[in-house]
Image (cartoon, helix red, strand yellow):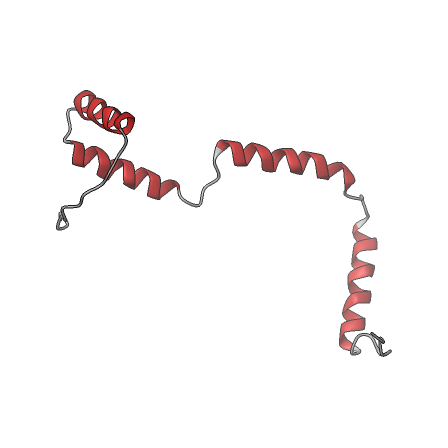
Length: 98
């Protein structure tokens, strides 16, 4: 089922126009279809990391990982239980002066 089309006007620089014309010729498709497909591809990529962003996040992760302390499961369980007890008891009972 094809959706209705709407005629629009855009202003593009000459380099973009040349790329559009080349893509249209190479793909043997109308320029409007090339633009529709390009917009769809761009839309589908939104929200995903670029290669540069992904590489930066991996670099930061690799940098931070050695800083994470290694602890036993028993130690973590004890700390979590202590936190739960404090929360159930109402937390901090002393007044903090400002």
